[in-house]
Length: 194
Length: 154
Image (cartoon, rainbow over all chains, first blue to last red; front, top):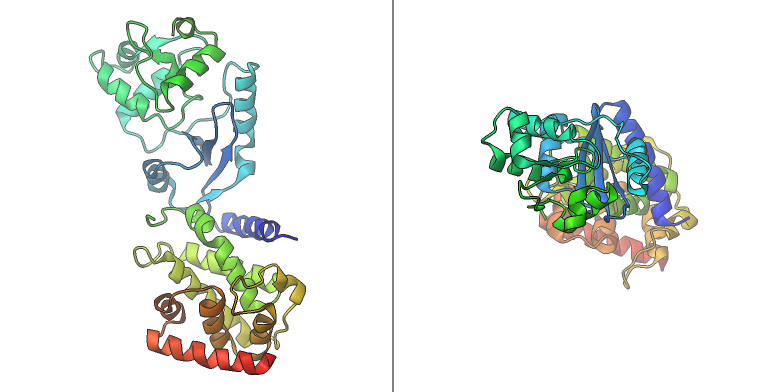
């Protein structure tokens, strides 16, 4: 019996009790992926966060705490459906995600931009201007870029499908290389040009 | 290190150390698990940690108080050396036998002083926070405890 095993068991019992008392509201895990580790979190209404890397940013955590309190705890079981869907997506066997997404705690503008982005189909791309227009403000393409850069649920809310009006990739919170790879998985035309 | 924002952060930063402390105080894995659980549930309920940057000493204080409370109600405690070996002291000047001796001979408060300083390696300022006493009193308690332990295992 190693210390890790002993603590692992103790932690599981602790978190079960915390959950029963309503002290644990959001469960997180770190998933492996072809793009490297992904820190993911699931709240009462669905997926709240997919973060490139094995630790979330402070601003991500602050959003979760603002909406759901400090009860953000490790809970691999809670993210098993998301883990499965992501794996299928990366394998090329899934085109759409079925998990619920939870955009609580974002500004109304961010929510509109991300909701518009969520409607761009697999394999297609749109532009910052078009997304801004769909969100109700055609002139806000630069602000749309900012909102997409802060997308708390990349991949599932496919901000990688938004590119510049000249077809350039422009930017991506996970890095342009990741954006290129996601578009390549989807066979998007733009991927072949970059 | 920034202050913990979530229960998950405080767990990941401190649970290993606090579990080890619980085992070194109670001498039994099952009791250590209960103490670990009590400590973190109490911390979650009392959230947030009271002072910036001092969450570690705060957790030690909660654990120490809980351990003392539990022992007021419990039988005389016996160290299980197999359990304890999982958390064997990592310092040259304290052996597993010293720790087992401390568990079986010292009252809870004094044992906490010994383990905090001599096994966990906390600074006296942190020991004082955990024991809710002055640094001077913490030093006195540790030195008294150490004498008793050395006498017990001699």
